[in-house]
Length: 117
View 1 (cartoon, helix red, strand yellow):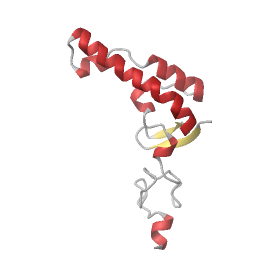
View 2 (tube, rainbow, N blue to C red):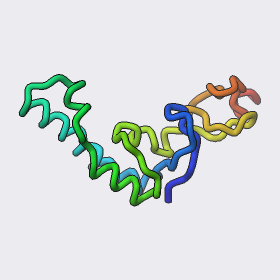
View 3 (cartoon, rainbow, N blue to C red):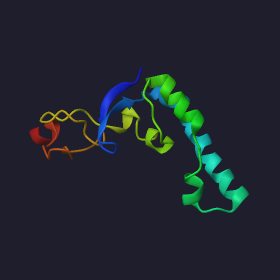
View 4 (spheres, rainbow, N blue to C red):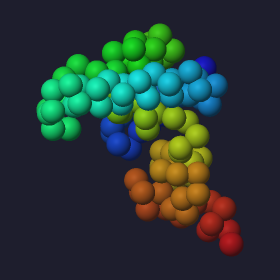
């Protein structure tokens, strides 16, 4: 089940997908990319123009069914994956930006394990 966690890109708490959920979401996001590519080929449009067209509706619907959270941008879902983030900062509580981060980008505190070394 998705876990609510602060997303530094969105600057808000959002449901983060677990790996089993991600396995279901990844194909829907891949299809969203394919939709943009097909639109560009069929219309000879720029990437910017293609991204302005509706795409990724299936991914957005799936994210809503999984989390109950309405998302409007399929690309945002790509970084709503729990495994991309590190543990919570011992100082401010926000998640470290990556599992290997040595300090918190939000408050600057060193990671607890890194500070002990």
